[in-house]
Length: 296
Image 1: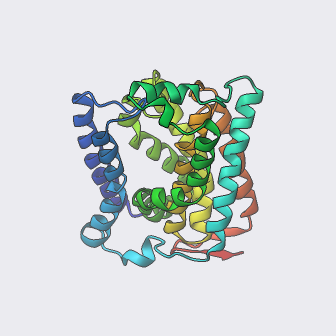
Image 2: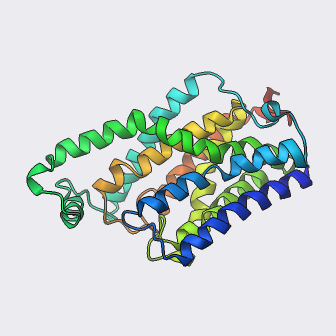
Image 3: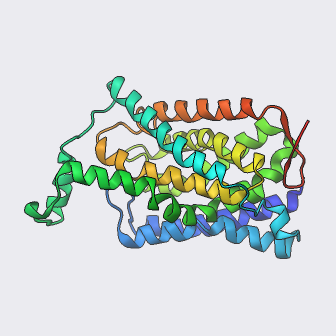
């Protein structure tokens, strides 16, 4: 294991992120509800701190060939298409279970959204019908959304799945996946304290965030390693974010974040089950340690 590179990567990534987000906390910025534009821009920019750390470490601290050592290849188009289909389907399952278990009810008339728009001063007569809004949100989350979100998400994934994960694989898959998941979750801790994903549950939310990132990470880890592609990981992360912050939260606005929806026990369970299936499917493959997988 390249301990020098790993600890340097973590120090830079967390140092930049926690430094900026501590200032955001002290300034009273919140991420529950509709975040301030300045807060949204800062969060989007900080998604590139793992990528910056990757470049600094591989170039100056523990030099390695950047492309070959960080899974920096696009690979086949097929996994991009497949993930653009099955991740939205998994979200459908999550919110269907949330509804059936009585943990949330769909707001078909978008009364919650309409109330927010009225607070913002939007004229009621100029607001499209709920069916039109939902259709537009769904189409946006399926088509342009993954490309837009994927660009920001690649900044994270080039670090988490491109740099960190392969260097933790000598510990074994289980330990590596668990470590990356927990580290990824703790990287979000200041955002959770500001209301991100778990408003009203700042401390318990950090624990749940680690469980969420670990369960989602199972799918992304398997895809990134089996296809030797950190861009694929960024794309999958972008698809996930497009669904997570698109139509579903508008349709299900009143869900306890610890129980239902994509962040609660229901979502964590679905992501973990899908990840376990992906791991079982790839059971015949093994990581070679040089940026790819080999059969047997």
